[in-house]
Image (tube, rainbow, N blue to C red; front, side, top):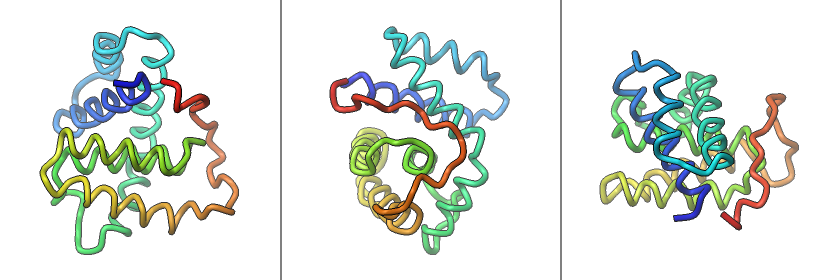
Length: 154
């Protein structure tokens, strides 16, 4: 598995963990990431994705629910909603190419979700790209972006 793919997978696992166990301390999450990822750059990338998603999770949830017609996040499978949260964060607040974000999210949905998860995740993230990140629009976030340079060589 590519280093960045492993970092994203670990970030989703930590988001899932906090979704089901909100009392887990962030220090414990950081330790768990360190246990799963030995390479320092990948470990930091995973942490940045995780903490960035957690910091704006309510706003991400609102955007996802607005796009997911007839679906509330509480009705979504925990794996799907956390893959969507990470995907939405990465689409809206990093410079990662949209096709990389969607492809990575679909792969995680195949690995951790149900048979319907890949299509569900793909459909929502595709709508988010069209609605929130048109190809000719400038970066909408004033937040410092997560460095995703050289994403294809990991």
